[in-house]
Image 1 (cartoon, helix red, strand yellow):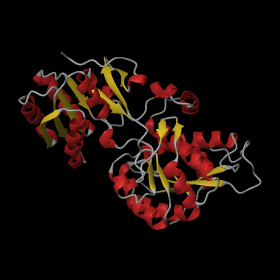
Image 2 (cartoon, helix red, strand yellow):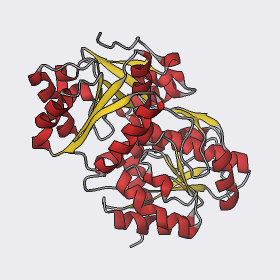
Image 3 (cartoon, one colour):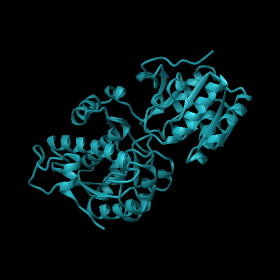
Image 4 (cartoon, helix red, strand yellow):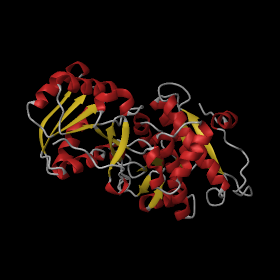
Length: 384
């Protein structure tokens, strides 16, 4: 059922219906997205919407898109991927400017709709590799694909002289991709994989004991938040301290340090973006400041990527000089622009090539950037 709720949207997002910088002589440009007012995706949608709100307010003060005021056109998908697909079917008929939903499953549900409608769409937050395998050249990613997130850790391990690595995945909902990604990255940086296993939660300790027997220099842990925390606690109980420990936190909603406490001390992880790194990119510090003023909180990566996704759409429209779908798609495919979360530039499938996650190491609860070198706040520490 179609539901356009401008008044509710204004109340929810705090959007000002009067644009002071953009022209009111032409009809507004509509930016389409599906969000979740209820269900398990509601919190993610709320954070995502806050980033969109900030960008629209700023864009309209600066002249909008192609001199036209920007408005948000949205649908409530109720955290149901089938409803997400229906929502984008409607949105694709009504506006050429589309932002993908903030979560992976919803994003995958949208792909067939985009291909059928020949509608380009920027996906700010989801980074699963399968988005680019089924997007038909209409899905454009903002973040580096998840398969590459541990690349910074492997580069550090190789530079520190580590030659072997083991990988344990605990309670991971998408574990079938982990082993291939580990093998690919290890091979790229010259490390040999001594052990790989994916196990349920109650088998974490057993898998780690088996991994320890292969004497790896580096250990990588993957899984749900409870899976990774269980593995870290098992490591502590075993008194096993690998020379370098990586914990994938891509499924986490809270910081690793908050979930695992001292058990995660000296562990490495990768973050798509962080407020403490915002100054590295144009407009990043201002975004953090404005978000804090508006909400009383520091932004997370969902708000930041939503804002950056809007920046990409606006840059594509400026490059195309039109809102024609075909020209927007060509512009998105060839665009090279820096957003508040990093550089944007994609391959022919729409997979992000130029943005990179931050590799951080936990030091007594503090996150220190250790890769890339030009952004690091501390040198990586690897046990001898």
